[in-house]
Length: 117
Image (cartoon, rainbow, N blue to C red):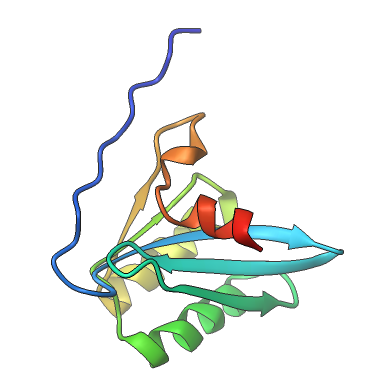
């Protein structure tokens, strides 16, 4: 297969304008990791499951502290880019931008944030 092109990201103008989001499992517990592209500030939320209601609540938990970002960048994980999450993003007023296919490292901030944990 030919290499997929990287999708470049621009540097945001203010904190919490662009946020990276990723899900990971540590010791049988699932977490949402969100990291601000401007300040590199990292937020972690424990998830009881991966249903849309839980994920929406986790996003609101983070947004209530920092405000609603313009863009949430994430990999192509099913839970993060589901039809329900697309509807949620439109209702709330942010866009979901996915990383380059087959190259989740292009999710600039969230992937290193997961590595920290």
